[in-house]
Image (cartoon, rainbow, N blue to C red; front, side, top):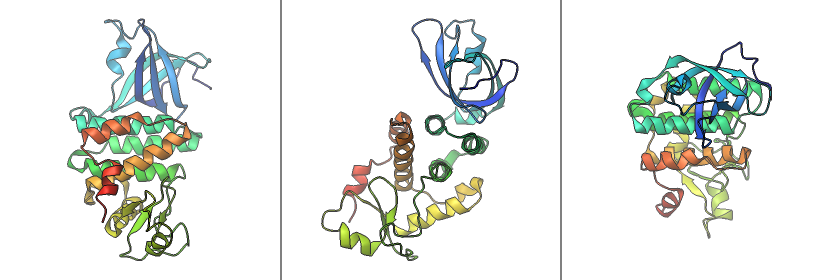
Length: 269
């Protein structure tokens, strides 16, 4: 991995910190310049560490790296834009950690990294507040689209027909597509197949979130089922990229008291 030469600060967000048992720590960061990067922060656990006070979540940082090995050294951190309102609420902080982990785990080509960073930064700059469910939904939808993992929400994945305006659909088990009423009745109605029903109003809301301006998400009346489904499928799809789990997704679900997928299945008619 190419790192900076220690003379230039680059934008980044904090994705996590792991202590190493000594004074040093491993710091995970996501940057539009270098993507996901794990760095070593020397003396981070010491009371006099200047880096520790500057490595804050939910802020747009500027970092400086030194070294060209697999684990460069973090030599400097500055705050570019702080967003303290995201740290004033555990609900919003839980959403931040989910976004940061998805960005870090799903790191890829430089163009995608830039787009993902811009998505996270724009959401951080906007007061989510009471619209946190919609913020989570629009993040999941747009992140999936950036990675080419968003299923076609307008057509049945099995027979290709365009879904009617009032037609409910079902998500295929791995979230790779939706199927219409006829395809569901023909292939899955007897067993259910573990498919989650998505009502027509949910589908229409997801389409509006995708097509409208990013920061207009607060205008959509997203409900807990919307958020639970999209967070679940986003975490699953992005986790598959690195063959690992997005651990912050479960923390977010519990913090927001969102239903589990099994609960949604059991509540379906």
